[in-house]
Length: 137
Image (cartoon, rainbow, N blue to C red; front, top):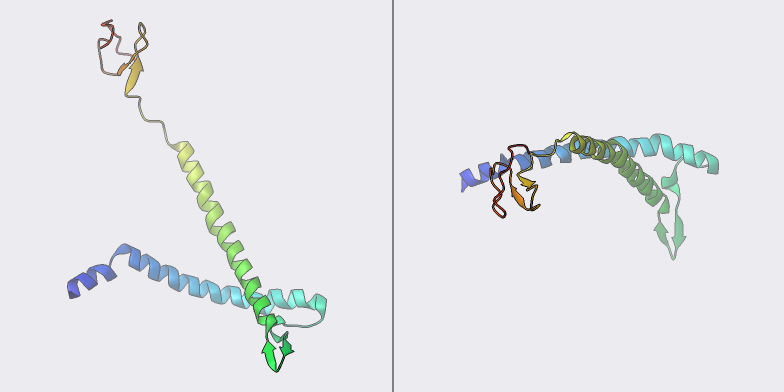
């Protein structure tokens, strides 16, 4: 059972997932700091308050911190934009480029010049009409 666990842990997908999680957590910290320290003050400078997190309203002695929601929403939108423009778009362009660079595979069939039947490329006679075929593809 211990060897199966070792195989599971050392499997490529598990390692990739762990690395992605660590990098994602670090990226989250950077984006949260960007939103908190740069973007939120810039946006709120137009409204006069330096931070959205202090925005709230009270209803029946309950405090609703909608400013934190605004900060989280801005963070989410920035993360989504960064992933889209820095990961998804370049990968899509790379895949499109590699698909254009791939050459078409050599044909395996050719047409008989007499009866227009499809015959294998290496055939020397047409299986349908018996005409002698050239070795050209």
